[in-house]
Image (cartoon, rainbow, N blue to C red):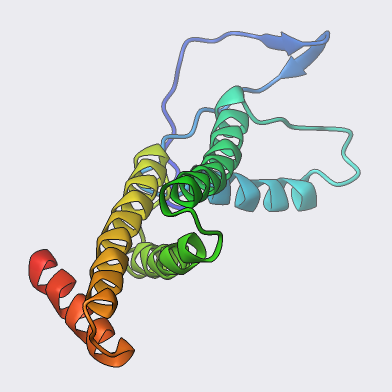
Length: 173
C-alpha cells in the first residue's frame, strides 16, 4: 500500500458504543480507494481474527461505492434512452440497434485505456464515458443516414458503406 508515516497528535480517548476506539485517517497518493480498502480489510481480517477487536470504514468508502454503482446504472439508462429516441427518430426498431453497436466497442476501448494508464475510475471518468457514448451515437447516426441516402441514390450496398464510412472518417480526422 505504501510507507506509513506517523504524526503525533494531541492525546485523546475516542469511544464508540462505550468501547475504546482508535481512529485512523489514510491519505492516498493516487490509488483507488475501494481497492485499498479491500486490501486493508483482508489484512485486518487476518490480524484481528479471534482478538475481540473490530473495525469499520468511514462514510467516504460507502459513498464512493454508491456513486460508482449509480454511475454504472446511469450509463445503462442513458443508452436505453438514446435507443428510445432513435426508435422514434428512425421509425425502426432494428436501425437504432445497428447505430448503438459501436457503443460497447467504445466502452471496451475506454476500459482498456484506463487499465493501460493506471487511471483510477472517478466521477469525471464516468461522465467522460457518457459523453463518449453520445459522440459515438452521433457519428453513427450521421454515417447511417449517409449510407441510406447513397443506397437510395442507386449505389450498391458495399460501395455505399465504404463511401459513408470514408466521409465520416474524413470529418472526424
